[in-house]
Image (cartoon, rainbow, N blue to C red; front, side):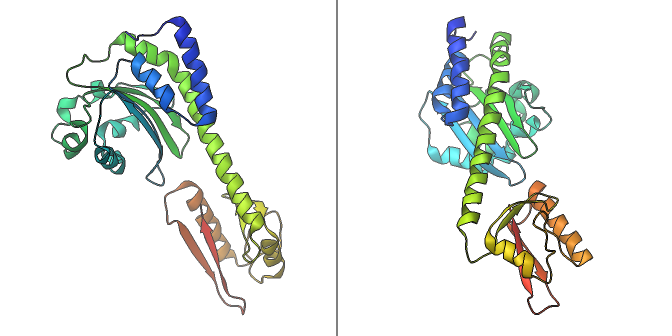
Length: 272
């Protein structure tokens, strides 16, 4: 049963929301690790389209080789418990080691390379972000010499998961807002290149004076300060398809659409 009383729970919930603003998860994870009687706890924010770990914080009650965790981060999609979580909705509790017992994964190389040195045997967690781009998890582990998580542990996890979910989503949205602000700053400071931000439909959200001048002068681009579009219909269809691909799906970091047939032939470079 979690080692936490009602007053401590209220304080813990307050700390959860503090983390959403500060982005400092380690102190909170240590409180959760202790409350769940675990040997480690981690928060992972995974960008599924980019196949990339955005954020990873972990606390343990033992020393470990950092190279092992580096291996895990590189092989995160191979984790069978992560794969099983893909069927879960945001806010759901994950009984990882009940749904896929450790005996079923002991033949996998990731078990020997990561699970054994990291003392991973029993595992539960919660899906706290699933927004179409990011998958966020809070995960708890115990070793083989510890008892499995019981209903009391899961009841505690069910109490804090709604708060972890809200905090993780706030944290994610703040990071996106910060990135967007950085993009806008870059655009406003650029003078030589025409830079603009648009959504998947081509609606222009922001642009610098050089981009505005291009819209006015180019034979290819429609002179419209509200939407990025091309005069040539088939090229415009390709442009919109590329915008959608970069907004929602995995693709190259930057794509180029070559505009030909005029003296001012040029490239439009599209990236996330």
